[in-house]
Length: 114
Length: 112
Image (tube, rainbow over all chains, first blue to last red; front, top):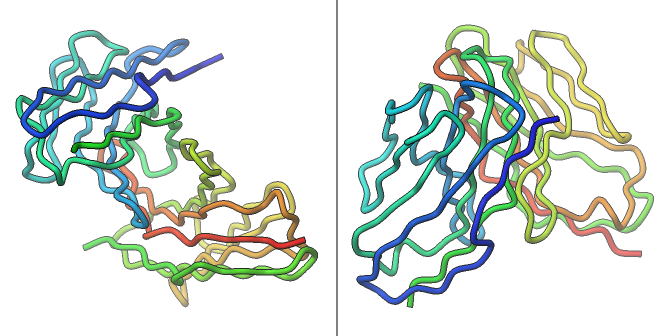
């Protein structure tokens, strides 16, 4: 069966520090991968998605970047965190590019930038 | 463009009450519609889906019908339980990398 792992679960970082969040998927090949941010009391904002190794699409301009060094690994990074980067970050995967595809979510990383 | 609008929360109900969470959408083409649920401190889980007009998705006593004429996908449950307390997201799927557009979420709190 397929599983998705995100870590760490919780992170507290000072303003201006770097960030690296990792997401890996097991049990499937060539998945689509997604990073979302959920600000407190708000919906999900798609940050990045990837349909293959090295292919990253950015949905909104921001202080973050994403990379996909391996087929089932998706990394969210920042060189210098801002206070506004605080939130709940969710990784998700799906297979195929159609409208019917279900996305499966990880447990999330709660990031607090102080 | 494509968008999803949900009723604002929080919604507070007593156990065994009837639940409706409204969701309307704007889309071009033939989207699929989903309801996801997020329990406290967790990621999202698929609750149900419908892939074409007049389809009814159902799971765990929840139902939603894809209404193209009213561009709606309202979530209903006849008798809620305390364990249903969570945030519910309506989402629209369209043919571009399997992406989803989410509504803002509706928090449901069920009291015993």
